[in-house]
Length: 279
Image 1 (cartoon, one colour):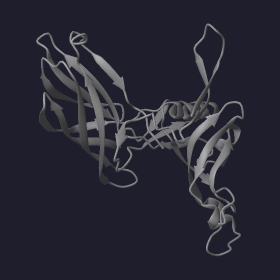
Image 2: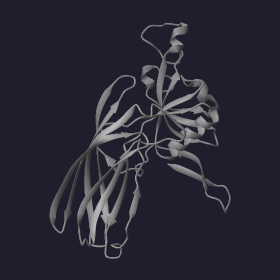
Image 3: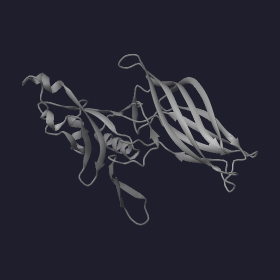
Image 4: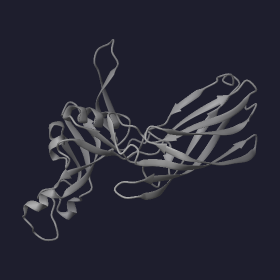
């Protein structure tokens, strides 16, 4: 749910409250097996708040580590200073400018004797204090692989779909920008056209860091006069070097309606911005 407030009649909308809970309209991505994390960094508290808020507006939840101190029980009752060195992961899923606080999703369940199980909040001013990295915001954007889909029809009425894949790029600085990369995208497109079923498969390989995109062109057909529902199945390889070398396969699927009617065939470009995530 997203609420907005008008600054005045001549200015744009100002986002004052954003929540990613139960928002099923932000993405058409299904059957996701993993996220493509990106770590943001801001050395100043005010920039931290705005960076986190911007990512939430973009539909990206934020993973942070907070000081657990004695708020969460352990197997044994250890009231020592070392316990405060431990950290606890929570997910920032929304914000409220009226209340000056972030909404967080806490995995520590109430039936585990955690007093903050489920949903809770963190005040803006407390964010740089309760975070483990108190002097600098270092938070992970838990985002889907970003995709941008465009439909092209050339002067000979050949229609194709162009897809860009890449990382989500948050506002501000990025930690380890050259430590994570995609090295492969394996894409299968299936659709029905004029009563016949078509399948297109292609694999592209390379190195795409944070901020770079891999592009793939998929031919659909010629002289198309109907809407075509295309199903995409994507398998990608993610390689990282921190905190150690790892390789991961992230898979996801989505459907895209290719609308090429007689009135729109001469349009050279029709873009869809689909870079949102659902929690």
